[in-house]
Image (cartoon, rainbow, N blue to C red; front, top):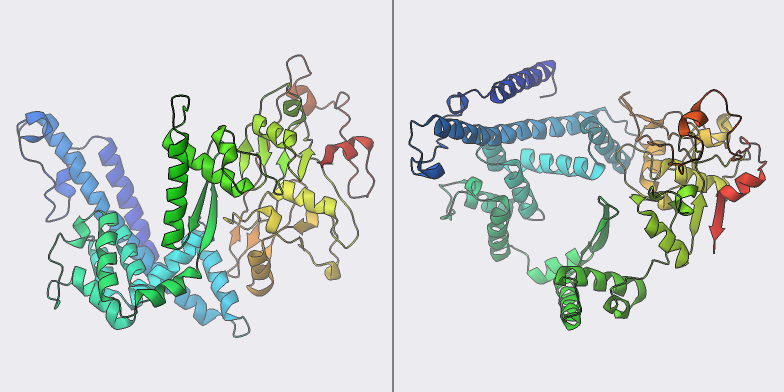
Length: 505
C-alpha cells in the first residue's frame, strides 16, 4: 500500500467521491443505481406517509436512503485502506530507524508523524496505529469484513478493544463467534454488522467475560493500575472532567451525588437533578464537603491558575472574555470571581490594544527566568507541538537553538514543550523551527516534512465607546499609543510593564 500506485489509486477514489458528491448535490435520482449489490435499502409502499412506489417523492427519498447506506460501506472500505497504510508506514519506519534510537523514542516519532499527517491528536494517531497492528496481524476476519464494507470502523474498533489482552486462541474464538458462520459456537443473533456499535460492544463484552481464560479478579487487579482523571475543554466556558475508576468507587460516587441531590430537592430548588449532581461533585472535589452546593454556589478553585484579562474588561468598561490557561475564553464575570475569591496564583496580563498580543517579558542570561516562563505560558498556552493539548503549567522551557551553539535566552529562542515532546525533540529526530515574540515554533519531522504549530489568534481588545479607535492605534501614527511599553530582552522594565503582570496573593 505504500507504493506510488496505491497513492494514485487513492487520488482516483477522491476524484470519484467528488463526482459522486456533485451528483448527489445535483439531486440525481440515480443514488439507488450506484448502490452496491445486495443493498435493498428501500422501504415498502406503506412507508413515508403511505406514498405509492411510483410516487416521485418516494423514489427520491429511497435514493437518499440508498446513498446513505452506500456511504456507510464506503466509509468502512476507506477505513480499511487507512488501516493498511498506517500498518505499512509503521513497518517501513521501523525498518528505516537507526539502531541508535531507543524503541520508545522511535514509537513516539512514528505516532507524531502519523498524527501530523492526518491532522489528529497523538492519542488518536496512537490508537489508529495500535488498532491497525491488531487488525493486520491478529484479526483477519474483522479486517476482511471491514474491507468488504459489511462491518463499520466503529465495529472493528470494538473488536480490537474486546480482544485486547486476550491470548491468540481466545481472540480468535471471540472473532469467530461473531464473524464466522462455520465456527464451533457461532453467533445466533443479529449479525454483528447490523447491530448498533454500542450494542455490539455489549454483546462482545458479555461473551468475553464468560469465556476469558483469566479470572476477573486478576484482570481487575491489573486494570486498577490504569485508573485516571481526564479533562477536556468544551464550548461556552465549560469543560468535561471524567474519571476512570473501579466500578464500586464510581457507583459509590454516583449514588452519593444522587442521594445528596435528592435531599436538596424541594419547592424552592430550581436546579435539576443533573445540575445538582454536577454542583455537588464539584463542591466535594474543591473543598471536601457538599455544604456549599446546598446554596447553589460552587466555590472558586484555589489551585494554580493563569488568567489573561483585557484591562478594560477587568475594569468593567467592556464585557469581552478573559483567557483561562489551558482552556480558552471564559466569561469576564468568572475571571472577576476568581479575583474576588482569592485564587492563589492569579495574574493580570495587560494586552497590546493595537493587536491584542500580550506584552513581552524578556532576559538574555542563560537561566530562564520566572517572568519568561510566565510569558511562554501566555504566548504558547500549551505545548507547541502540533495537536498536543498538554497545558503549559506542566511544560519545560527549552532553547530552540542550544545555548552551546550560540542560542540566546530571548523569547524568540524559547519554547515550552511538554515532557513527552521535549524528549521527542532530543531523541526522536524532530526539530523545532523558529519562534517569534508572539508565535510558537513549527516542527520538522525526521522525514523532512514541515508541520505548523497552532498559531495564536490575537484580536484587538474592545475599547469603551468614546476612547480612540483600534484603527487609530494600528495606523502609521503611534503618537496616541497608551504608555504600555516594554524593553526588548534588555532586562529593563518600565513602570507600566511592572504593572502589566502582577500577582494577586
